[in-house]
Length: 326
Image (cartoon, rainbow, N blue to C red):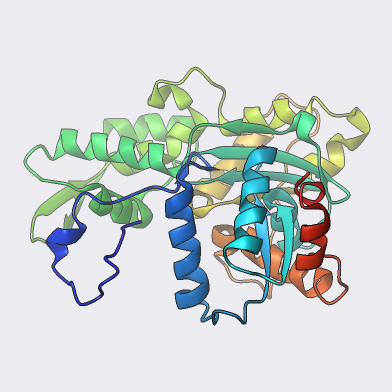
């Protein structure tokens, strides 16, 4: 995000240069001042909250969130934002709620990380859940690298590449199809906002392939489907079927053209006796549910926990705040 001067009359764009900050890095809060600014903007400007009349809030917890981070977040929300009620739930649980499940697996590809989590009866099984430091940011950087090789005279910004990735990135049908594309692939021309023309061909397929072949990113790791199977193999065998047969893909990257089909095809080739099977969203849910499944699940849960007073109130917090951060 970019910091905006407190004096809104200052509209000179040059004042905003070199002040881009990242409150969250690889799924963890790293800059608390920036995070507080972001929350203030979202709550009071975005949601229209009024100072002195704040409401309840439900937060999603990424996988492996340290207790100290949760404690600080709760403290900020009650002491700086004066909220009246707080509730937190893990992202994997909420993403499953969005598709009508309480047990299953989630593969959540975020901006800077990928979380694979198993959930049984609404509880994340941390012993069989893993975080991998590969995400949309890494795919964007890979796409930028490949585009610069084939378009050396075009000046690309990361913002340009992000938009190009969202529009053009896709997955080949399988490994053989990807190898064939590397030999011959049609190109498309795209005109950038500044008038530059860029050609996009086989590079668009490299983005998706990296999730199934991390070696493209120079990482020594198994592909995404094999990682899922290995995580689930650590739980009791009696739970394998209900977990793998209720697999949910989450995150913007999961909406990439061809990704779901490639994932399912790779799953049929899996070494596991029980193969991962993707859960289709209910018909009444939007097609791009993967982009914000945790948010949808959170909205569903909020309609239960707050009316039934299952949340932490300000009085609860003042009595024993560390208990509610555990």
